[in-house]
Image 1 (spheres, rainbow, N blue to C red):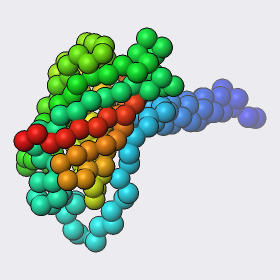
Image 2: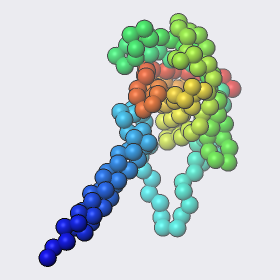
Image 3: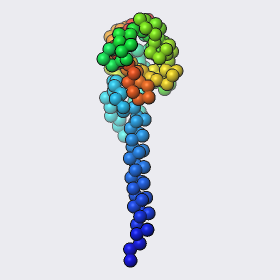
Image 4: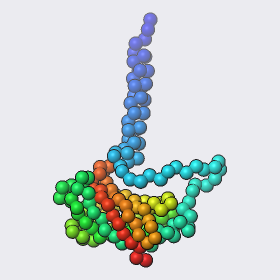
Length: 180
C-alpha cells in the first residue's frame, strides 16, 4: 500500500525548497541594482591565479584626485517634467585613500534646487579606467547618483543618473573642470 501522507510531505518540502530558491534569486537580483540601472560598467579585468585584486595605480588616480567643479543639466526625456533642463552647480572632491577613491559631493542652486534638496553627499566608490571616471554618490535621503565622464586634461564631460529605491529618478549630462 502507498503512503500518500508521506509522499505529500516530501513533495511539499521539494516545492517549498524550489520556491525559496526562486525568491532568494529574485531578491539577490533586486539588491544588485539590476532594475534598469544605467551607467558605465568597467570591463572585467583578468587576474592570474593567486594574484591580489586589481588596485587603482597612484599615477592614474592622481589624474582625477582633486576638486572638480561643474554643472549638471537634467534630461527632459528621463527626468520628471518639472525637472526638465534643471541645472545645478556641483562639486566632486575625489580623495585617494587605502580603500581606493572616495570623497565628497556638494550641490548648489543653478536654475532649480538640487534633486531632493540634497546639497551634500558622500562619494562611496569611484573608479578610473583609462580616461573614464565613475563616481557613486550616496545622498542623505538614501538616494544615489552615478557620475561618469571622460577626462581630458583638467576637464571632464559625461553623464549622470540618480536612483531611489532602484528606480531612475533623473539623468542628464554634466561637465566640469578641476579647480584644485
